[in-house]
Length: 173
Image (cartoon, rainbow, N blue to C red):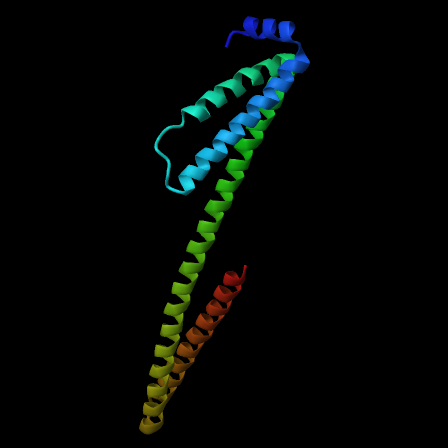
């Protein structure tokens, strides 16, 4: 846009009148946007957004006049800050989304690990019952071997139980 034309308009019409004009143009844009949204929601949109584009152009012209009125450097610094804040907000929201996906994946993995460990524990318990029954029936010199094997399996079951407890704690976090 040509700043010299905008400066001449401000000088000719005055800053107050151009500010009022900006407010009027913004209201017209809001009205056209509301109408467009209403058409979209009612599935009556026929592809004509020319009224919105025209009002948007009017708003841009008057916004540029306001920028000249309030000071270009001042406005551009605030625009830079707003853009930076927007970029930071998007980065934070992306991190939150990625974190949520990671937590979901982690919990899913923990649930799977828990299921595997529970299955393993149940199988080991069943095997130990069979070993104990066999051990009692045999009453041979092999008893010491079976006792140590059963003790080893019980230690493994206890370790698995501890792992399950740690998984449950991790899922609560």
